[in-house]
Length: 402
Image (cartoon, rainbow, N blue to C red):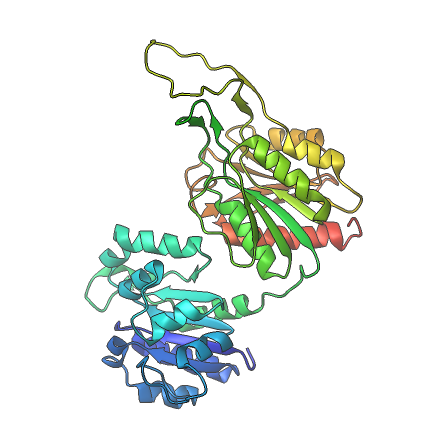
């Protein structure tokens, strides 16, 4: 924490007084804390409180430009190692999710390229409201980290999840985020993500439920840790992580060509995409009309990307596959590990609604060709991504396989 520049955004909720404790803890650990308050926050706690604790001017008004050499919100954004919003109201979360910049804090948030941590605090019904949850999911999809509110008696008299996380827990989360190192510097990683679409006519296609979240999380983690990342993605609703080189494809054939064209550059190929196993033998030139009670579509196998990558690999390349299964997960994963000739298979049971497709969490088991078996508990896909990168460093590169 020593010398780290942390921007602490304080918004207008009753939990603003806890932000003073957070500011004090960060300062005592040696961080340089720059507090930005919304007008609403100043109704709960005086800026003088944060000025005293941080030993820095507190910024409130976006038009209060005190130094003609710099634009304040750009300067603060550029120098930040981390930006924390605590407490975060439903209002600030909505503004962040939709790019609204109408005060000092929101303009700084838009301008920064530093990691962002959000600590929500609000009434339990507000926190559970679908708009708030949609906005939180949207921000998570763009790489914003959250520390969830805790349950308890709220200031409004309700009881439930809505209390600001304990400042000590927020500090611990900040420390973990700042510890991220550049241990993947100098390596190139090819990651595939999302589904493919196999057309049967100009308006219809076969696909699957993959959201791309796991592959995107791996791409973001590798880039954050210093790797050059080449992301080959099927159609998703996600925004690519900043700094990642992206190739967008639609069909399995297109993904096959894209991956093969990039594999010579890669030290690691992680195939997290859910590629269609079959495609239509013939694609109708015009929309197929509903004229018969039954329709027969003839399918053929798509190219086996993982097997071909494994066959063409050069010495020192690490190949990782994913196995999304609905039954006999271990047996299918072990068979795939041998059949494809890869170094690792990451397997998960997508029949479980709380993990796998279209959600933010995953529970996986990793199998290695050297007999490795690691069973991981349910965690966020971002945590799975970092844990997978740790495993590859230790079990492949540090052991001299790559």
